[in-house]
Amino acid sequence: MSSRIQYETWLMVLSLVTGAWLMLAYDTLRVFRLVIHHGPIWTGIEDFLYWLYAGLVTFILLYEQNDGVFRAYVIGGVFIGMILYDRFISRIFFKCLKKISKCLKMIINRNKPGEVCNREQSEVGD
Image (cartoon, rainbow, N blue to C red; front, side):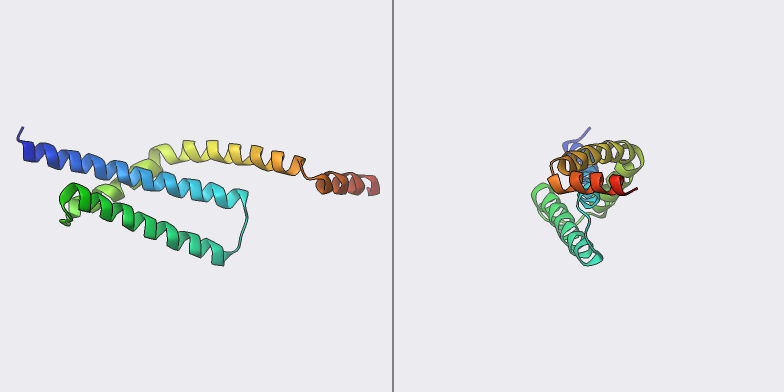
């Protein structure tokens, strides 16, 4: 196989991995939203910052690996990497992250003295 075809194949693999990485970052953001609830304005700001990050990462991929030359198949590879991650890995990973976030919430709530007192007072009143 020629070195050019090997390079193009490697670039496609990198674009798939980049897409999976971006979805992993978004899953982490989703778990953050589950742990710390906030309104739609903050959610919009977070999404905006995520997409700035995604665009920057994709630009860096194109700039460093392909001298900034735009290749549609690289962008397509990033999207395909995102879709593959979402279909096969995200569901399992997100379930694990949700369990971890529930444990963190329990630990945080356990350490709040007011929460325990309020619970005990509400049980006494019943």
